[in-house]
Image (cartoon, rainbow, N blue to C red; front, side, top):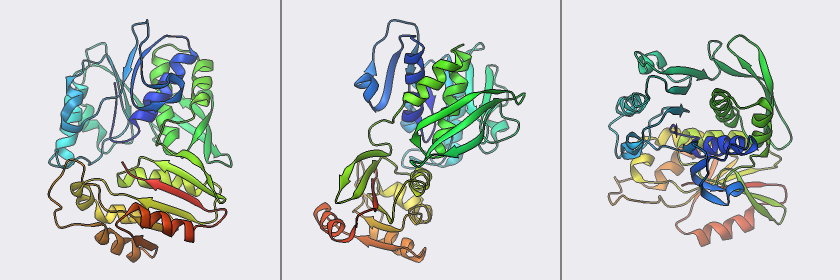
Length: 333
């Protein structure tokens, strides 16, 4: 089970590519479209079953995993959870589902991690920035498309191998690190790990290049939480561009209201921001909030920010104002 507030689909897909490179014939259920398997489901013939596990409505507590990856634990889905402590409590219950001989791969940089994992009787493997983490990334560098390469080192500072990613951004270094830790535990070769990660070119709606119009590169991305927006825009800053435009459609009133200042700070990483109306999804109460509130805060951050009620208006505006060499990201759930 691969869980966490962000990065589940990407990491599940990375693990899938490695398992396929190692000829393990896995069964896969992933929350996005992965071109390699021609969809989001693959039925295999071995005893390996990899699926992402979502915390929303505590649905991940219905699984009975033998191995878990927890990528990060942050506040989100506050229409269901009370607060971050409530979310941490659910993740703890999820960890407790592991048997004694189970394995937990977890981000060692999670705030107050010791409190979360205290008393668990399964094996715990940490990945992250910290010196004490079991798996770390060193010598990180980026090519002209913001794709990272790095060395994987273990707790004894031994270099296990060199990884080149085919997806952009620093956040994907740490998604890959979790995939490496899991696959090493499955006794897969470093060759299969290197080859699988190089072969992962992304899933639909995760920094997905849609094409080029009048010399403007169009990228589509699923980011809908301030942390995800910041990760995507940081990746875009390393990607070739003159002006970085971000068209953002906020997703749900509760999330927009809960993270309003954080949304503004993250969006302000772009040069110019365009907002659409908030997408209500399952909600009926607007909580007295609209994209105009977000627009005001982005402008306060010192960035130009435009707000239109229809996609037609946005399209017209973009065609008139974006120029050859610009990078345009459409973003939201």
